[in-house]
Structures are given as C-alpha cells and as structure tokens.
Image (tube, rainbow over all chains, first blue to last red; front, top):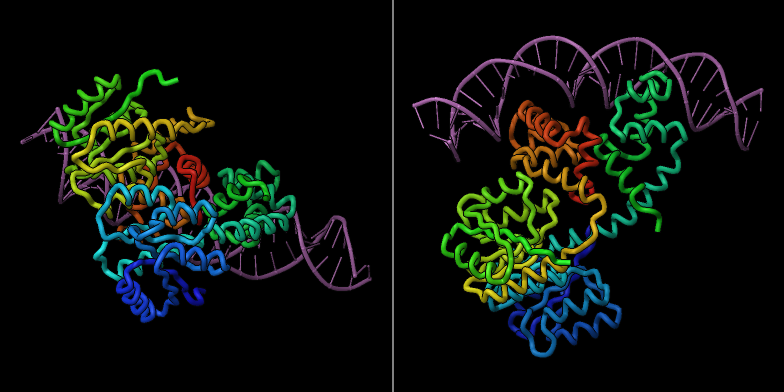
Length: 207
Length: 207
DNA sequence: TCACACTTGGGTATTTTCACCTAGGGATTA
DNA sequence: TAATCCCTAGGTGAAAATACCCAAGTGTGA
C-alpha cells in the first residue's frame, strides 16, 4: 500500500540535517530538507506535500511550535514530529496540545524517530479512510431489501434469531438466512462489527 | 455559574497533599485528598464527582498516567492535571495524548497550578446531552477491573472468546468467565447492547 | 415467457455462546 | 490469620449462531 514515504525535515543545524537525510535514505524514505520553517513553508505554498514533517523546535525565526500552529491552522493534515535539544516539558505539552504528533528529545535514537514517523503516518491515514469507508458502507446499506433491513435492525438491537422471527412472524431459519445475507452484503464478520457499522452510518448524515 | 469548585488531589506524599489542601482552601476551592489512585477510584465508584483532578504521576501502584487512561477509558469527563517531580518529556507527551489536560513539573508555582485548573474547568464546560444516563453507565464502567476491561474491549471489537484468549494468552474459558462478569456489571444482555453502550460511553472507535 | 432477485423454509453439522457449577493461587485487607 | 477479591481454568448441558446445502413460491423486468 505505502508507495514511497516522503517526509520533510526542518532543522537549522546542517549536521543534523545531513545525518537524518543519510539515515532516511538508508530506510528508503524520500527526504526533503529545509534549513528553516520559512523555507519549508515556501515549498508547501508551492504545492509540495509530505507524509510527515519532522522539525526541530528551537530555530531562528519561526519555531517548531509556531510551525505546528500554522500548519494546523491552515488545515494541513500531515502529522508533525517535533525534536528538541532541551527537555522542555512545558513546550512538549503545548506542542501536543496544538496538534503535534510527537515530541522527541535530543539526543534521540534514530529508530525511535523512525517508529514515530511510521506511527504518525499510519494514524493520520485513518480519517481519510473513514470518510471513504463511510460512503462505501452507506451505498451497501442502500442495496439491502426492506426485509433484510428489518432483520438487520432487530439483530443490531440485540435480538436473537428466534426473537426476530417471532416478531416478524417468520421462522428463525428464515431470519438466519436473511442475517447471513446482510452480513455478507455489509461486509461485517460478526455482530459487533455490524452494530458498529450501523451506528456509524446512522449516526452521521451524508455530507 | 461556578457555585463551588470541587477538586480531587492525588499524591502519595503527605506533605504535598497538606500543602495543596491548605493552598486551595485559601483559594476557596473544596479539596478532597487521596494518597493513591486506588483510593480515588474508590471514591469515584462510590459516586463522587469532581470538577478537576490533580494527580501526581509517580506513585506506588497505579501511576497518574494509568489513572488518566482509566478515567478516559471510562469516559469520565473531568479534566486531569498531572504533576511530576521528574521532567519527563516522554511521559508528558504520552499523558497529553491520552487526554490529560496539563502536565506540570515540580517544583511548580502554585498559581501556575491554579491557573491550569481554572483553565481546565473552563474548557471542560461542554454540553452533555444524556448526562444522567451517561453518568450511570460510566459508573458501571469504573467498577470493571483492568482485565475485565481488556476482555470487554476485545469482545466489543468483535473477537470471539477463542481469539481473545489467544491474544491475551489465557484460556477461552477464562475469557468466557470475564465476559460474563462484564455483561452482568455493565447490565448488557447481549453483545449488541454492550457494543452500543461502549460506543456511547467512549464516543469511539474505528473497526 | 424467461431470467433474476427476494422471500420463505428446511436439513445437517460444526462452532460458539451462555448459564450454571467447582476450585486453586495470589494479592490485599481487616 | 482469616476473609475477600481477582484471575485463572476446568466441566456440563442447553441454546444459539454459522456455514454449507437444498427447494418452492412470488414478483419484476427484459
């Protein structure tokens, strides 16, 4: 699924930049380096997009924290991992609160940073998938027949096949058949999943 | 609006507890002190509610971080302000990510803590719809042990007893027992109901 | 009229859950 | 020390769900 990860690294220290560029190259990660937040923003304004942004906190001009603020305010979805040389708890708290994904102290293990980046990207893909997923599910609900939907609703309400049958005046066996159909169509593999899907779909009107 | 602020303070250090109690008394804030997270949870289970929870991070038994996890998992809305003696950035990051409102290093200015508490309470004033019902459900969640909660979460995710057992490295039979306990305690009569209750209380998650 | 989908219902066998029960080990508390 | 709670795990038997198979009646649209 992951074609090629493309990240941005922002640090005013040339040595750090070089070191990280080399490390990420070895990890098969495409890296764009920037010596300042400003340079980075220019690239963003030029239309460049990254899967993850790794930035130092303390830099001349715009700090990493400012950058997070700016990016989140601009609605940019890419996760930001901040790196700091000074173990500043207050700043870490502030950073996470404004939406930074992680906050790592120098000196850090490169593997730790890598793990955080992977984690950030993974978590970040969730909402997009959710929106698309929701539409997919909604369309599947539409293909259900009236009877199937009836059965589904009662099943989601927690009734057993027997109870559903007596309520709909059909045999439990028929209910069983309908139920299997519903599960297959919706793509749920168990009742718990079906309940979640039903709640998700019915809990949110189409946008 | 603010009748009387009532907060909980949790710290295993008697001196800190006394000091804060005195300080908050002077600020006209009602304070309940607890020497451990467990004592605090007992009070919560007994139905006590607080506008804000101030807790030390490092304590014997349950840590402040565990506490936040537990409270947020149970859907309790009260904001938590954590205090730590060791400037631990990683822990601060983890704490904020799981939903702590603030993370303050010792030694701290009492006014700083007070400001954070006021801020937390103010931010926390969001409208709750079926507050009474949610409270009832939350209190039930609080009575679950850690293991029971684990089992519940996996069950809600749709795993079978066998799958849960293999994941938790316990026998399916034990899972079955835990599950029965959970169902009884929560007051759910089938999985569908459990899933719906869990989603309501925790306002979550993707499958 | 024919094909297709939906509904209905049955059979059979396996798996899973549910509702009871007992019982030991470990940790905590009175 | 005794009581209590939790986690562990086993047993039994009933109920339910699941995964397959099958067929017949009813529409709808090509």
